[in-house]
Image (cartoon, rainbow, N blue to C red):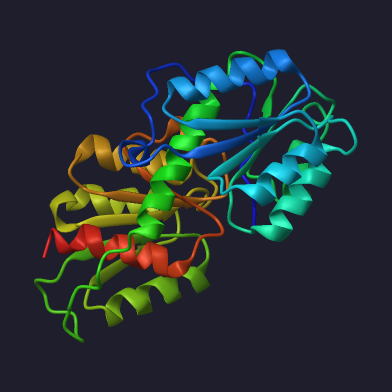
Length: 286
């Protein structure tokens, strides 16, 4: 699992809405921090966004809470009484490989190599401990809950012909890896869709802008070459033809902050989840 690590030089401003799941049930967050002020600050903020929050003041207490209740995400500090947050993250991850884990810390981990730390301990994102971080946390949680909603409520497979007729929906798949392109092209064609591939943002944009109405879906990696990447491509596609769905799969954090009306899948996600979501979007075009 390659985690996202939030670039603290980016500032996000805007209105954050609660997760789509919050309408049906309030997602529960485990917040582990030894500072009462931080627990109150983050706890009140998340409750205001329609999340339930359970707090713990140490790593040991946090692990006890995690064993006792079911949580949708964990937010923890690095410097905790008894054990470091990275140790707590390791223990939680060994119990539940899928749960999102976020670290909010003011320790030197931010000024060192946070990406390496996050990858080593399978932490989804690392944030600096500042008040400006709160909207970022809400934004990331919203995206994670949306992904979980799709995962836990999969659509029924739609029936498609075994060959790709000329009138079948068209997908533009963009990735710098020829292996990934061949795999996605093969799988989607088996499902009855037409597929066009491109290995860079520039090539994909040239293809799309020539016939924007031709494509019913664009699936792109974030960094697909030496140009600006999948986020820029997705934003240009939505600017030219807003009704075209765009799915971006990435392990990079800035997709949460820069992508406009683009569905984001965090690596590593189940391949069946991507296929299921593509089916759902393309069924509307068939």
